[in-house]
Image (tube, rainbow, N blue to C red; front, top):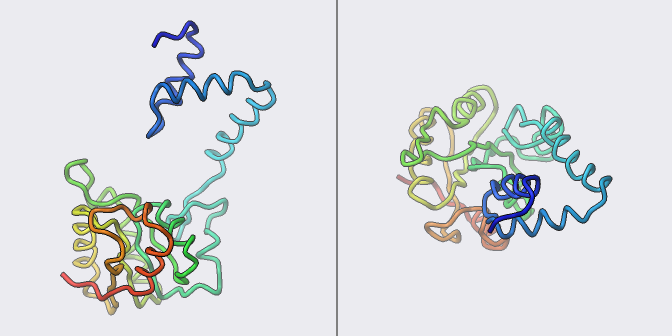
Length: 201
């Protein structure tokens, strides 16, 4: 549909550039914003600018944080010897919502996917190896999506880390094959973590 304003059209283009938002939804959101006061719009836009300026990646695990080290890594009550390897920040949020995991995390920022041009060098793998070498880590939990790409990444990580004195485990099969971790319900995810199994090739 043609919008009779280039400014509205530009705003629609920006909103529609977000994943999962079509142009009709983008137009509805833009028109709703158009009816807000200038002060509300300023606060709205400022929140994104402040987010971009201040949010950091944790220098230890790669999680999002307002500080150099995230609150999970700083928490003295967490079991620092158990590291749960996840694809992205959404998986950290999903697992934390279960309140059943007391270890720490390592965020890869993706999984190996040759079809998408993503290889091991594109992921946060080198830092994981450095953590294993320098920290007192005893267990690695592979908590990646139950997909071919997730399995490929698990296998690659295992090959890189198997020389170290580590226990390797993976989520139990409560998480359905082919599903992404972030979409698993909290009860299923909690049971999958608590009933994790030894990682087998």
